[in-house]
Amino acid sequence: MTGSGTNFGASEVESRPRNKCGGKLYIKTYGCQMNVYDSLRMGDVMKPLGYAPHDSFEDADLVILNTCHIREKAEEKVYSELGRIREEKQKKSARGEKMLIAVGGCVGQAEGEEIIRRAPYVDIVLGPQSYHQLPEMVTRAIRDGGGVVELDFPAVQKFDLLPESTSPQGVSAFLSVQEGCDKFCSFCVVPYTRGAEYSRPVNAIEKEAKNLVDQGAMEITLLGQNVNAYHGEGADGKIWSLADLITRLANIGGLRRIRYTTSHPRDMSDDLIAIHGSEPKLMPFLHLPVQSGSDAVLKKMNRKHDAAFYLDIIAKLRKACPDMAFSSDFIVGFPGESERDFEATMQLVKQMNYAQAYSFKYSPRPGTPAAVEEQIAEEIKDERLQRLQALLRDQQTAFNESCVGETMPVLLMRDGKHEGQLLGKSPYMQSVHVRNAESLRGQLVDVRITGAYLNSLAGEIAYTEHKIRKAV
Ligand code: SF4
Image 1 (cartoon, rainbow, N blue to C red):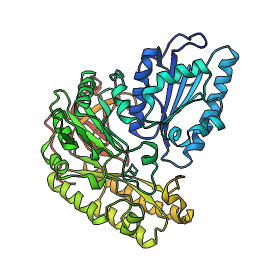
Image 2: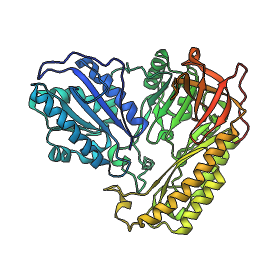
Image 3: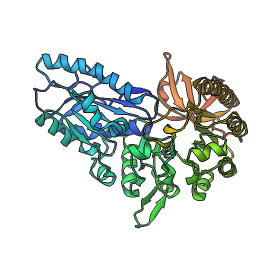
Image 4: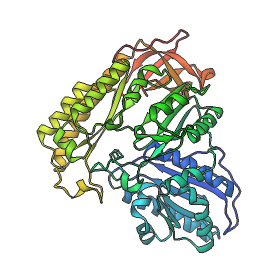
């Protein structure tokens, strides 16, 4: 689990007297891009109450932990962070000042009132579908002294009631188009914490996308727990697919790149596959999790597809767009996974040749069906994970090395680690470090790739037209 403070722009706001709304807002975001997006929207929703961003919980008037339930021991990590924040709250209290603490996101949804029981100094607990109610909850917490819990699933209301996004996200922005999941993979808490699938209407998404572009975005990543299950209402009153939505957004002048994540193999419809071959703004990189290469394990995972189905989708995508590169998620040591099952995963990876991938040992999530199955020994999981990760590392390095000598469009986004260096993003989501390019910050420029590492590329500005890569 990773955590980061969310920065909304300005950082200093006068301290407010006790029991008044407004002041310094610190949001710590854990987990996925959807949580990063949610944190920005929580910042938007709190602005009218006078809350402005602050970059640490020290001295903040309102601290929100926007949590993630995916990683192991997620709850314990949240409770230990709460312990640290509590000390600061006590210091403020001794000075006669007030700090409100809120726990949002998937741990908030899963733990609910238990958080207030274990950590009574927490004032507010809210689920991911309730953050439009945050201003009212903060007001209640100030008035009544805390203990405010809201865990309902009114998804339609949430998006309807949120204000327009006013937090600039820079040249690369996230836009949530879909939430929730109806798939019920047996290892996953998302259907329980985020609720049923819901797709935002096309008009609302288009309006937000135009706003983001007006604020400087050149690349937009469409987000959803199961984003390719998107089925939102179009302006014509009909249901639009993700491919329809992408086609519409691609008409926005100034928007240069579109991505979407995270997808499920079952929802890779023919029109979505086809648009990878026809829409140049749609990047030739797809994160399409398979989780395992064994049909027996996929069945136990309730993934609703087998390995052949997945490989068939990949073949269709490669046919539509020969330059396409892929990443995936893998769970190693799922209950019942035999050595033979694991070998099937290794075979699938060899067949796929991934550009990137994320792999984890299975760890039970309370309340999910797989959590009560007989578990695989830790040392077996460790050994398999090491083998898989060695293979994935080799593939990622080989993919990066295959880019050396190519010229590709890179979106120069921010400072690199070293002085005089900018960090950009390739069409394939690789980090690209470029020197002496300060005047091109925030632009999409052609870069000739001069070096490759496991996690990044080095390049130099090429003042020639870029070539599209050959098949990978
Ligand atoms: S499709 Fe994804 S979000 Fe839905 S249950 Fe499966 S892993 Fe979880």
